[in-house]
Image (cartoon, rainbow, N blue to C red; front, side):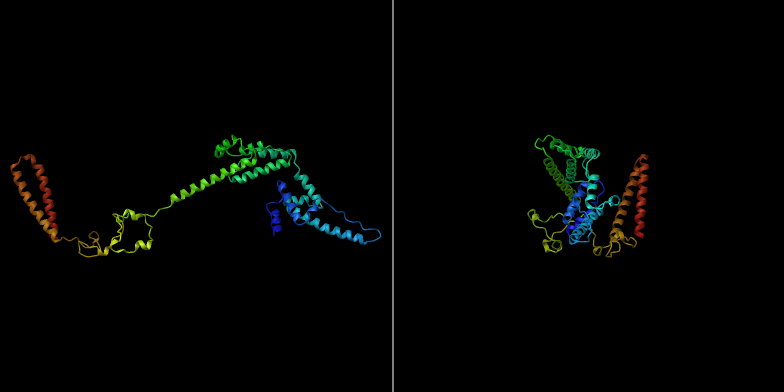
Length: 349
């Protein structure tokens, strides 16, 4: 099962493409060692020559051993070829043995030229934190680059490694941390600065999670709780009841909820119309013509008598007053006549 997983990895993203030889050749060795054919990368066996006097027992034994070795060597060679990209397969399938293929690949991709060494150094010095990577992933990438430089013969001191890690952090988000770690004399190795950065990254993730939880909690709509006017203050801290218990009747001690001006719908079955004297609607919604009640008629007659008395008084005052009050008297009389006509019309209909 483990062999199948390793082989599928070599057939997938771990195929040799010319840039990943450092990791590819390790995985190939692990896989061939598990298949017990690792020695074919460094050893070879010549084909036995048939003697002139015919096949002997020793020749047949040597031929059997060679055939067995040849099968294993083909298996190792085909494994390496199948773990390459298609363009590389066409280029390197001409080598007949696994050892020959292994040595050619080592010269082509394993050796570090001056150009490759310069490229590795430039990449290491200019590498910065990728926003998509976590701090652990960032430190792993830098550790791999340090290892590649060491394999190429370039040794980096601890001070150079620490400065390279701090230089790779963006100033906008990690500027304060860079300043603190730069002046910390206790940080002298790559492992020490990596531990501090991991702790700071964990602290930021925890703080971000807490802020997100507070924002989500603040955005939730809280249910409205009516004021309990009839309940004493000491009883308000008791355990909350369920919804069914709140809706259940409790007799005289039942707490009545106060509604607002438009707190809920009214029961129209108990509503009485004061126009048609019927139940089920209000006078403003009545479809019958407006009716004049006896009480309204009595009030209107009383108002008419009062207006007639007032008219008589005004006529006497007008007779004895000067002409300067003529305009006011005329307007007042017009209003009284209009009101009198309206009341009289309503009484007749």
